[in-house]
Length: 164
Image (cartoon, rainbow, N blue to C red; front, side, top):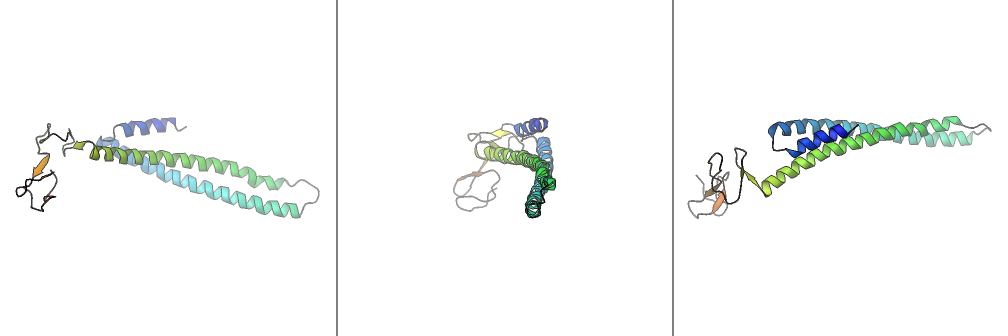
């Protein structure tokens, strides 16, 4: 049931840098978290209600035991099973939705910490002074103290001087 969904998530997570994949991943994540939460809540509410009914019917039936077998005591007990399946489906959907969230956040973290990207989307190494694709400077040097700053910096991280 969930194998096709797992494959889709794996495909989306494998190329999370693709903007189209990011949007599809966000939409799928929203749906999975929404429906997983709803199913989990409804299922837990149903299991809890059945447990309470089973306990109440059980005490009532045993107190009013007239020699016949109280069949009604098992109705809430057997209703717990479908609600438990709803809980399991909700938990699986939540897990799959969170796996998209975690993979996306992890990919972004890895890109930012290990690899750097230029604003054009091209990967740049720490040795590059200019982007090999668009030619944009990767680092800005402070005119006052000659400190090497990130290209997005507006002010020097070392002395606070305004950067060009």
